[in-house]
Length: 100
Ligand SMILES: N[C@@H](CCC(=O)N[C@@H](CS)C(=O)NCC(=O)O)C(=O)O
Ligand code: FES
Image 1 (cartoon, protein in one colour):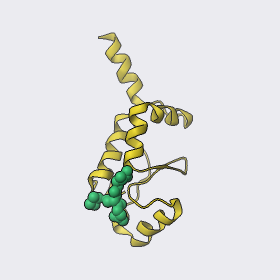
Image 2: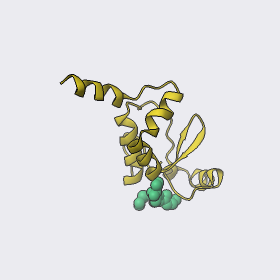
Image 3: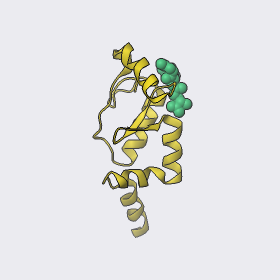
């Protein structure tokens, strides 16, 4: 990403942080490519993907901001988190809604 989860330095990186936060995912490793030109280029070569941010689940490249947003909207992100043993906080938020 650009910047850090606490202080994203680009709207695209910020969007990814916010989507993950919505699902209750705050404990992940983030690397600031603005601090490291080799990482900035190297991660693009590694994933064969031209832009930052890049999201990896269990070491597997998932996509950037657009793809994460799409996965958030179509329910895939909840499913992918489930595969990692992470229960999305959004599921509990929905339950709370039902109770009201
Ligand atoms: N549509 C992209 C938005 C991200 C994007 O366009 N990133 C640009 C601007 S931050 C980028 O990484 N450019 C190459 C670079 O800055 O090294 C996505 O889905 O992630
Ligand atoms: S830093 Fe300018 S669009 Fe991301």
